[in-house]
Amino acid sequence: MDKPKHHIFVCASFRAQGAPQGICRKKESLSLIPYFESELADRGMTDVAVSATACLNLCEKGPIVVIYPENFWYGEVDSEDKVDEILDALEEGEACEAHIIH
Image 1 (cartoon, rainbow, N blue to C red):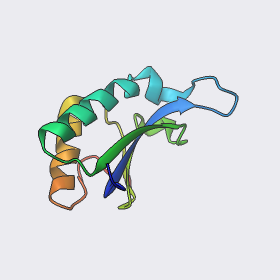
Image 2: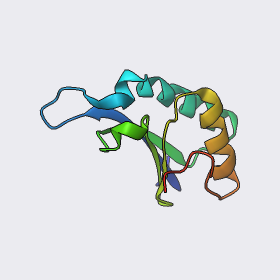
Image 3: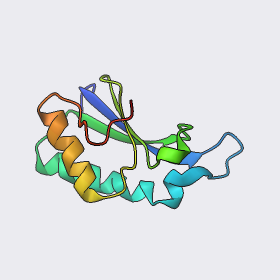
Image 4: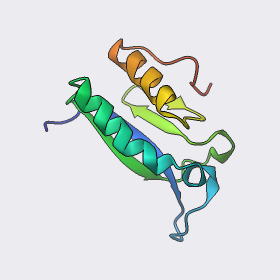
């Protein structure tokens, strides 16, 4: 893959000390990654990368998903339906207002 047009980051709640903390991991945020990757492949969106991150420090709104370079921050992304809505908006070049953190 060439340099991605978009990069999706999924909070994995890891802290510098190495211990997972926060709500994202407890709410199964890591299970979103294979779903994101599968949906992106199904949609032919080969120019999008997906990565897990360390704690994004918005635990009260977790699981957190961030999309760059747009700088879209999404909260409470805890289902495949929400992932679908976010990817639908990304395909249209827009933010998914229903889940965006303002």
